[in-house]
Image (tube, rainbow, N blue to C red):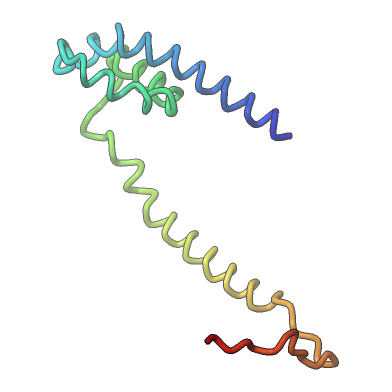
Length: 122
């Protein structure tokens, strides 16, 4: 099982490295004119693009086709904040209630026993 997880992470990072090389070497110039000539910036972006490469590909496609409406870019996350707050509140309360109701109780018929005498420090 662990080998499968490691293999999946390696495949994810190899795909991310390929996307990062193509995007940071060629694609970023086409969608962001401020990135032209900023080569140190690209080196710093490389690890992040490797990790979130599906999101990078999606945003690259949206920006390259001109379907991005910057006025509505952050509207869906803001609309979801209230519902996420309610769901997280309910989940935290359920976790606390389940944790307190399912906790193990100490056996009453076992008396405590001292394992060894306390040693005096000289």
